[in-house]
Length: 284
Ligand SMILES: [Zn+2]
Image 1 (cartoon, rainbow, N blue to C red):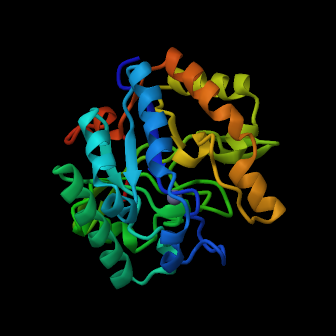
Image 2: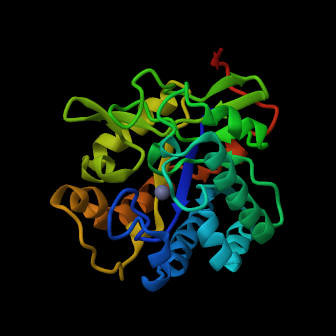
């Protein structure tokens, strides 16, 4: 169907980038943990190459400073490099000045590494929360064109958040919001495009929802993390709930992704929404 694409996004971070965890959310300690981001991201690059797919890779500034070659390789393979913030801090826990500084630090690291403008953003843990976040205006002021951070699934995001690509009108200009693919899990609104609720849903159910989305001209947005495909993921100290969220159904990610991409070639956000080509839905 013209205009309807499967969109794939990858949040490029280390396995220990867990917001709010007392043992892991401590940037001073990150250098002491074994780094796994390069081989696990390479595994995703290989899967995409094998299926002639492209994706938007939202890379942390912290990762780009340590592994600029990885960012160059992502861009060199035809994928879009986007920004996942600098230190994986939740956006709604930062002041406007802190958010702007985090954004600038990350963008500088990413653009230094890949040599191209970075104009797409995803907040760690969907932490922009709602269209009333003042940080959305900051994104436009800082030159970002696309955001993919608003999830219409409470309590993570406002249930009134857009469920389709929507142009948000800001004083400094337009921001295209491209939300992740949402469906239901045990009768409640839930992420279907990635994460633990998607991994624990039946594959046929997710596949049927994808086909229904295409049938109504939607662009289902999937996402994954390098640590979800890492066969040498280090052990972690997590509560039972956090363990389910992080590890539950992880072994299904690669085979399911391969089957999905064999049916529908994936695109980056930049390919699905070229500059100047915006969707119909406009929010004031
Ligand atoms: Zn993240």
